[in-house]
Image (tube, rainbow, N blue to C red; front, side, top):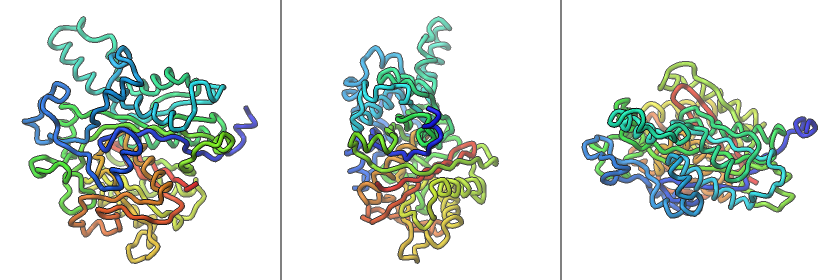
Length: 431
């Protein structure tokens, strides 16, 4: 064991599971992504028993028709004991394991297989419902499953039980950077010899009256009063953007020591080669006005990967569609990459915000966008930023507007920036 921990291992991605507003499996999600389709829709009547007709924010990115898939993986008794964010994690986790062709019996040493997921909020719907029960019927009506249904680490807990994962498990909670940090932790765990396999990514489901009210009153959301077509609402880097669209989903990746993956002839999507994380130490919700923390996170990630910034061919932006974030992220990219992101440079790095199609999955966003970056490398196709019709003059880079493009490139990064000042950046390499 000590000998393994003294080595630096290469880390491959050998399985991907995705469920989000664009589809319930990786192929469907990817095909809709590069076709530039939006997954945003109006909230249906009586969604989860809640009415949104009077809300100024009545659209979102919802996972649809997932129940039949869930029933195949997770029986009804388990479903009743767990919140929806855990259900989505189970769907994506099972798909990732099946995709990797690992099993419940292989690898044999289960202590070398861990699970680290990122969750921003956890089971907020369960907490809302339980509070209503407490107020209406008293303490004896509060479910004994309130805590295990809602706490953030339970998605990793259920996956570890179903797949007998006996390595380290847990949850990273760092707002919108949560699942990028989970992947960074898992990457380092394998690279530094503490595990051979990690199931890692993120899950989130908090499209509820309470969450929508809170984000809306914060003026972070795009209002349905100004956008009659929900598919037009998320528009990063566009002059007419007015906030993000709340969304839900899960993205789970199987990370594996590259030499072990090669020994079993596993399908390899790509490699994770770098991770950088910093704090702004500035404000509870706003980015640093010069993006200092984000700049440093990108620089650390590139140094960790031991590559030159000019090697980067694609940047999956955090790109939330808020006035502040998009402008500051543009400033950050210019300061770090200089002429390498200038549209005047024929070899410039392309940028896109896939939140224009998925909406903002909060704690699950980083892993979802990491998966998109790896699939972009694998397929040599860059997903677009849709709804970029009237580009903000202060956002003056090449955001791959409205149509996917084919491009030969070897390296990509994915940015995640969260409330509380967390900045996380992952670097990927074509295999």
